[in-house]
Image (tube, rainbow, N blue to C red; front, side, top):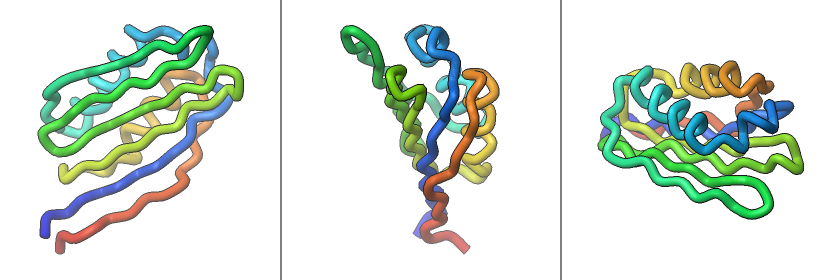
Length: 113
């Protein structure tokens, strides 16, 4: 079985202005995928009214998804990758870009040697 890293995290105390910017969030997700040497296939997002959004980068190696909750000052992050780099790097990058605090809820390696 291939090595798969599943990472679930929270970004708290983020800039609400930044977490409401669809283009910024999509750009951060694409940069996070690139930083992990992953292959970007497609980016999809949906902006909710009056606030919040969901964005996903579909990767050849799996996905990175975020769900923003501006009213809670929080972003839920879900990553799964069979790439060789540690996904925690990308979560830290996202926290820095969104001026938030990173909390790792789950970090699990499945398979691999």
